[in-house]
Length: 455
Ligand code: SF4
Ligand code: SF4
Image 1: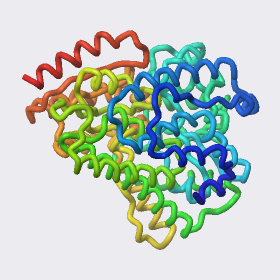
Image 2 (image 1 turned 30 degrees about the vertical axis):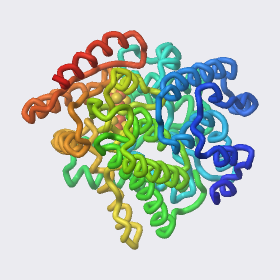
Image 3 (image 1 turned 180 degrees about the horizontal axis):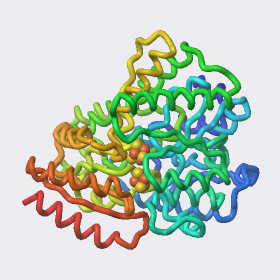
């Protein structure tokens, strides 16, 4: 509970969670908490945001709380959703008031270890909702990726408390839509952009190391302190602990039959981007203990013979649960996400034995250069990784998921499709956005794909 005091968080906010631990929330008692006074202080459009809160609560009830036989330890993650606009923001603001930098992120390339070492807080900003897209389309072109529009719209419409709370936003140059949007976003909130190499030659690695060093200097400037070797070593351990917990969860869900739904694991992977990392890792490990007991007792979700699907492709930012809901609603179960909100975030750890700043930063650079985002060319590692995860997850088929107008993932899909054809893996490609308009069409295609697998 040390974190409660470190972040100046009151008992009222979080002790309830621990009292209720062990009791899974039911649909009737669930609500996303409102904090209108705090939202007003953050300069938000309170009336509109409150309507979005109610809508999100309703979607969550229907998508998550109607699932049968959920692991008991999902109670913590339900509560993190209930506190998404209240308790967690209060914690972040308390940290900020104590002088800790708060940095909003959109991409797994942010060197989180550096932020943690400076005492800072990283928060993944929302970019998975249709609700903010009209705000973005008043300014940005319509024919760009919905993730970029959704995220930008949250700031333009003043309808995200995280966006309002950050000291600065971390942007990167992984795609054209993002890198040009940062220039506009910077007029609304300070936006620091890191150049991400698009190849993995030695010169690219050198460039990335110098970018990491510049980012460290920026974080130190905002924190008003220099990061020490000891602080960075500690942060590496914290991040490794968090990533190990997620790896453990992913390995357990690969069991046949799986003890947890894909929707629940996706939720945990999404919460990884806004929860406090030590607490989060400990709760994921408790969930894993729960899953081990379920596996020993032969408890499966949803049924022992459900078709097992692996999803590969673009990240599903909160609250994008559309594909998982459709696939699992059709009686299948998702057993892996090869995605940045998924394995790409946690498959690689950092060495923990380095003793000086230069070596730690070089190790950090190496770890982040293993991320096989489609922005890289060539990107053979990703094709191999998809096949590896397919085998490890004991899946029966792969759905490649891309967002509209995401050129790199949409083109790279061709190579994934060819690899699946070579290996005889049942495969389907879905390109979508956040609107409900294509739900019927996707549902029909998913059902046909599952029938094809069932033979
Ligand atoms: S898909 Fe690429 S750009 Fe998007 S979050 Fe992952 S690494 Fe970043
Ligand atoms: S999904 Fe593709 S287009 Fe959208 S932000 Fe990520 S890399 Fe850019």
